[in-house]
Length: 92
Image (cartoon, rainbow, N blue to C red; front, side, top):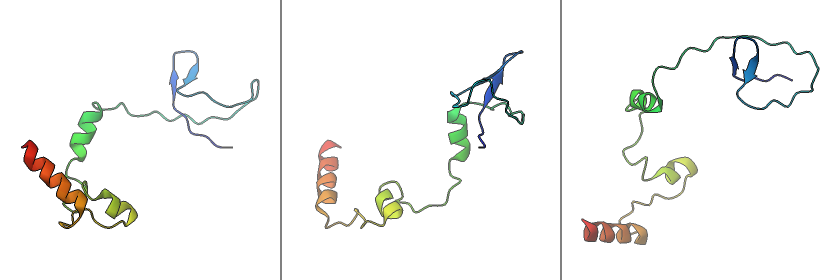
């Protein structure tokens, strides 16, 4: 069995970030690798990734088409598109 878990060393004990399903009083071999400090929060990571993925312009509105191969919804004759367009015009 191989597992990768992150732990925090409190100066005396390694404390895992998640519960471990291990037998008590059993010897295990561990490998220690220091993780780099995170530089910022999740918003900084998202900001750094913005614009780095090449994708079609309608990716967000047609995600089902690109993920699952369903027909595109943006067909002007599609009743859902007509309803959304009418609602959008009424609201704005």
